[in-house]
Length: 356
Image 1 (cartoon, one colour):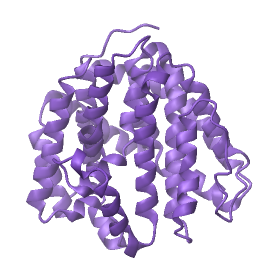
Image 2: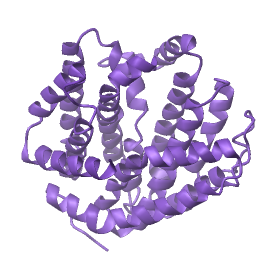
Image 3: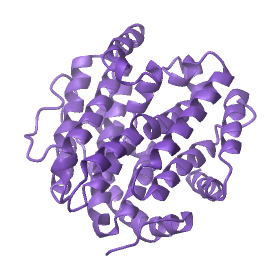
């Protein structure tokens, strides 16, 4: 099915609701049933919990498939499988009692293997007690490998995608080790990259690595018969660090109070004041939108940024009972005021209310 590029928000919403979400529900339900069949009790519990609490990650990621309707089934299957790996491993690391970086690294090799055609499977659970997942993680890896081989230009974008995936895995390892070691590990990691990203702080770099949306955008680019290297570079640099940074900094913003109470790592908490947090988030939004102007089909990517703002700022955690989050969020939303932002905000409120 060939389709014209998306220029208007209503076109995006129509395609998502009419074509993409039904495919997503079908694919998500398949993996949910697979998760319920995992023999090991703890692995089963974490797989189901990750899918229950983070389904919106798959929903948001699958929006990218609306950009390339001829490959919508392939892209939805690929995005759902890859995001399910990401969310499942995040839960396993979050709930780990060992805090073992070797274990976390071994688990996350599955993400790079998933993005490498014909990569052999490994024992991803080698360094943990719980091992018997009934082939769940291997099946997710194989589904990704199967789908990427259907993308005509995947080999041209593969290295960029694997690089982003590796940065994501690095973050997951360092942010889940013992609390007293996390910041030092993250700062040492940042030392390798800070000369390449002089306009951002270490915690902003770390946040940007935590987003998978750049990978999904590159999946879509790989559906083209040929890929212009300049176009690929522009897309990569728009998503990392800018659009990916917007994505995860917003996520940390709405979790600010919750993480403070739980003693969890939160990258927004490193700003010295609410004003600095607002200014840096706004800076990322502006840089994201500037970088989008250099991309083919910029309207779609601009709607992604507007959609991220709307979705996160419509969260129930943005309320007057949490004044720090509320004040920063409302200023960001006011600054972003446009018909597109308003439409996505209303749609996000509708989605959030359906979930509760």
